[in-house]
Image (cartoon, rainbow, N blue to C red; front, side, top):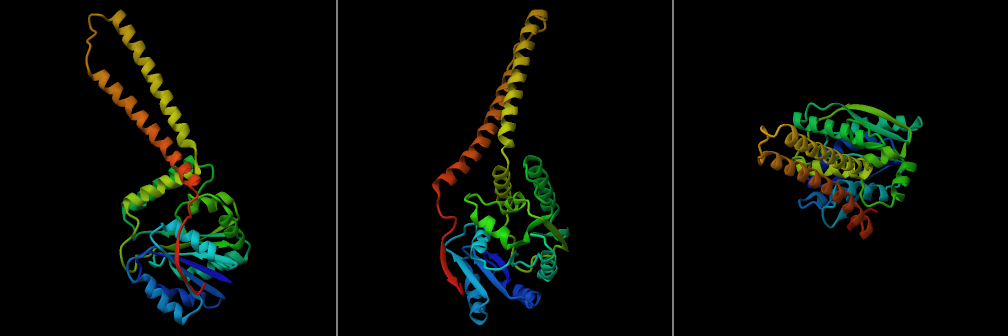
Length: 305
């Protein structure tokens, strides 16, 4: 059985075009399609309900509010019953037609099949540049490399999904969690398409928060970096003291007391301290969320589940 998880947030115009392309691709299999409505305030949920009344294999999980893309995927994984599980967005930037190729790779023994973007000309230069920078940075900091040019369009074996569902952590950076497991992986390459309708929900601030989430979830190296910054600042300060003492002794006639050195020193040390406090604060916030043990999401209703 094939489970297809589709997180949706204000995608009412994309539901029917998406299903028109998805259903023929998965028709040869026993399947279920689980739409996870992440607090949409348009007619997304109603549109899915109407389709679900005609096709019992189409299912819906609706949240009370927006809990985020990663939580929507988590809910889908927890409700999926398939032997292999595919996650895909409804904006049609990721082509459903390559799903049979992903299933073929899975049948040959791979536990994880990534859909890797061979070309992404539809994305802006800024988005491509920041995405490349993010993956290089997180792979430099993390002990578990994350494949580049892949998103959340992937196929997972039942074993991998069961592993993800058993993880107790509340901070869910699923791209990292899947890679961390180390399961046998393979790739299917595709050309990224233009969004069918609507606008992207990943603003710059959301992408930045997503990057911080990924880095702080899968690496403690930023904390070590903060220690290095503190050590460098202390070293520079010590050298400045030596410079001041030697200058006072050997160059008394040329020594001019001014505010520039003091200003630069204060700004440098203050900047290092603020960066260090910010890094520590990110990790403390992770501890705070884990200790609270609140539900990861709240389900308002379920259809065909």
